[in-house]
Each structure stands twice: as C-alpha cells, then as structure tokens.
Length: 319
Image 1 (cartoon, rainbow, N blue to C red):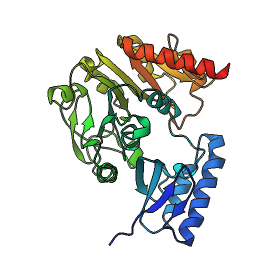
Image 2: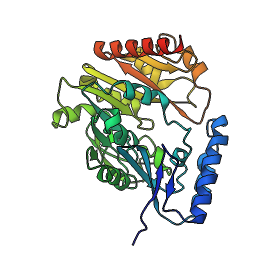
Image 3: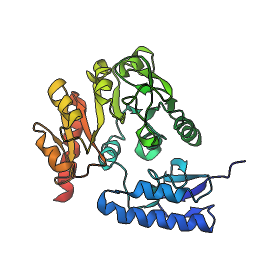
C-alpha cells in the first residue's frame, strides 16, 4: 500500500508526515532552489532528481492556498522549487489570473502536466473559475487526475494533445515537463489530438464565452494556434511559451506577423504587460536559454482593456 503523501503548507512553511531523511531532503531542496534562483535555476532539476533517487517513492501535497492542493512525486526536480516559499512559478501568468478573479472566464490549460494552473485558477482566491486541463501523457495524466480528485473534481481533465486538427500523434521526450508531439513520430505513446476549435464543436466550451488559453505544448504552439482560429476571434487570450533558446522568437514572430492578434509580453524592467511591435524587446527579456518566457496574444477589446487597467494599477503602486 502506498504511503500517504507528505504535507507542506506554503503559507506557514509547516512540513508534516516526513521522516528525518525526508525532512533533511526538504532543507536541501529549499536551499538549492534559493541558490539556483540566482542562475534561473540552472542545474536545479538535475540535482533534485538525483536526490530523489535516494528517497522513498511517495507524493507530497503542497497547499498552495487555503483552497488549493497540488500533489507531485516527492523530490521531483521540476516542482520541488515550490518548497522554497519565496519562489513564484510563472509570475506573468499569476499576475493576469489574480487580476481576473471577477471575470467569468474558463481556463483552457493545454499541456497541463500535473494541473498546477487548473488547481489554482479553480480555487476560491483566484475566483473559482471553470478549468479544462488537457494533458496527453499516460505518465502524467494519472497525476493530473489525482490533483483534480483531491480538489473535489472541480476541474475537468482531458487526455489528449492539442494540434492543428483532430487526429492522433506519438509523444516524444523523456522529461515529464517536456513531452511533445513535435519530435520523432516513429516511437512513443500514441495519443489522440484535438484542435482548440474542436472544443467548440464537441460542446466542451460555448461560443461567445471568455477564455484564457495556456499553451504549454512544447513545440506545436503554431499548429495549436492554427487549430484555434475561431476561438481566437472572440474574447480569448493565448498564453504561449516562448523558449529562451530560440533567438528568432518563432512563436512571437508568428503571432505578430501571421495573425490578427496583438502580441503582449511582461517586461520585468517596467513591471508592465507591454504591447510588442518590435521583437527586439524579447532579446532583452529572454536572458536565460534554458527557461521559457510567456507571451500573450489577443484580438479581444475586452481583454486588451483589462490589460491596460492592470498596467494602470501597477503604475499607481510604484508612485
């Protein structure tokens, strides 16, 4: 019988249910994150995963807020940074989500992994929004489904990939945070593929709604955009990952040059979500080659007005 998961409260820092070695490992994982944060966490995942091999196989449930539990394997290199209470995962997404608690929108969490954003966005402090978490990997999906279960099944989990059209594909990759249908198609798990617009066709979402669409789809962002043309004509925002090791800014260039969407990026220098007309701004923002940077794309007057208002709030805070 599997051991009950360790419990960690991000607000208080209390760790419960861990033995002495697991507690020592938590100290190492936390201090490692604090040190590695000075280098955009370069090398942290590898070191944490090595430490994980010395730990018993069990989960850890992290209390993200009073209404959000997020479970992952203890010692996981990608998610153990959450043990560092000063660490913030994808600040620019949290900024938009927190500012949208009063908006009646649905999150389409494409490439959901274990469901971090679906857990948060569906929680009361974030507005208790509807979320659909979409994850193709047979390795990741049970962990995603478990996170839906421990949060009262308040968000839906779909096992499929997102692409340009309905069909099937094969996954490639070895890291759970980077499985993709963009790689070698000769091997790997065969998975169903949906286009974003198929969610409208299949009645999963309603036309005329408001949507925030997180695309963490590891190399098929452009294909996913092509498959969501109808959805993007309405009140939707694409939240896409721009990889730090792509100097041509492929995803942003496509949004700017091939779609009617306005391209928006969070600029840490101004603490604003800036509308991009010249891609050179990304040369300054993308300082680390081994991490991703989120860019936004929208043609929605509603969401553009919300972003303008969010920038105005940020300006008032620094005055």
